[in-house]
Amino acid sequence: MVASVLAKAKKYRTLTRLIGDQVTAQRILGLTEDLKLQALDLAKAGEDGIRSRAREIWEENGRPSGRDEEFWYQAEREFREAEDIATRASEDT
Image 1: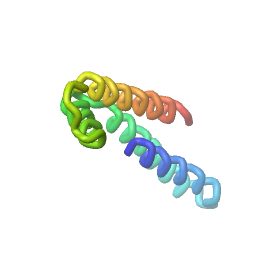
Image 2 (image 1 turned 90 degrees about the vertical axis):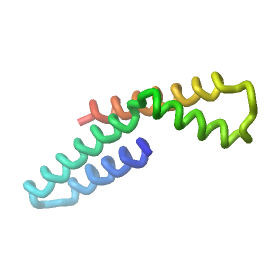
Image 3 (image 1 turned 45 degrees about the vertical axis):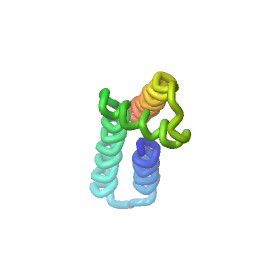
């Protein structure tokens, strides 16, 4: 989800180079900044988000028993990586 939001922001940013109207280009650039912040919010998971993703991973792996911590840590790692990507993207201007 984070990657798709950041891809959209990048696409909009690229489009601003093709627009001759400076006001419109500035508005679109403002939207790209909003999208970057949205991506950052999506990447910040609380316990519920991690739990939900860990359950998805568990289901994707055939619902094995005894691997709870492995899936929990994988979910945490995914959110941490997504947050790092979103943070770097929000710092790019």
